[in-house]
Length: 137
Ligand SMILES: [Zn+2]
Ligand SMILES: [Zn+2]
Image 1: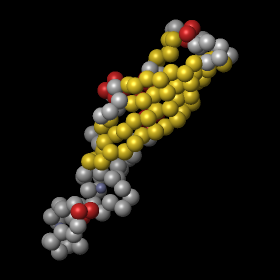
Image 2: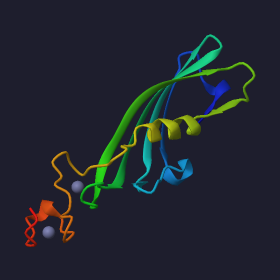
Image 3: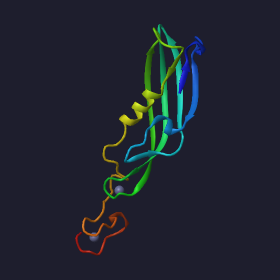
């Protein structure tokens, strides 16, 4: 998402954009964004700076660290960013900050749910799907 500085009117500006997650290089071993991210920015000009209220919405898939099943989770975050205008080009690229804000919120150990029972250490069966028969419960 880019903001062209001299197109921000005194009363501010509202921008909406859908971004392909691959543009932001968001994927890790555990977490993949597959659908476009929705960005909504309220841009205001304050003395020598732009203030941006940004809402990021999306959905990622992750592998549960206990049962190894893939699950999907909504991502939503609101942040306020400030960009000093002195010595800037005529546009601001928000993508580096957007990427950082998203990655900061990644779960360290993704869980499909707080109650996930994990897999049986002996036979590898997913215990969320019922007990296994190897007798190690
Ligand atoms: Zn799980
Ligand atoms: Zn088992």
